[in-house]
Image 1 (tube, rainbow, N blue to C red):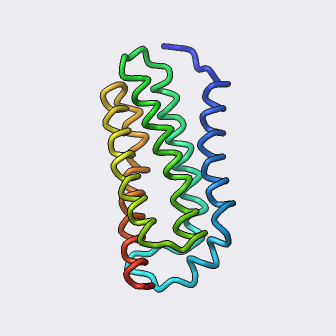
Image 2 (image 1 turned 90 degrees about the vertical axis):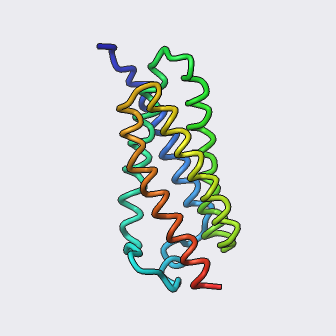
Length: 156
């Protein structure tokens, strides 16, 4: 079994958490904006996002670490997809909450869905546990897509 490179793992965790924190920072008052929406069925309470997202970023970072440690020839492509999806993830709340451009954010989250799905598939081809770690994120993003579309429809 390969020894854990704690420094690299910590950098990946900090990178993912920082992307999330900066996305929130540049998005204005997310809690107030979310509370003001007419929400669709199954909408979670606002406080839940503050618990779910940090956990998802942690799982994503661990998955990326597993891929970084792999000698697979697909590693570079998979890591590139990981960073691109993280960048799109950073942009989405700024457009959705900060700019309140709900239909533009629908387009962005649909691209994010495809990127996260592709990243997960690439991770699966390299190391299955990394794909399993990405699965909660993929499911949450798909749920967020439902919420984004419904909020766009209900709050025109």
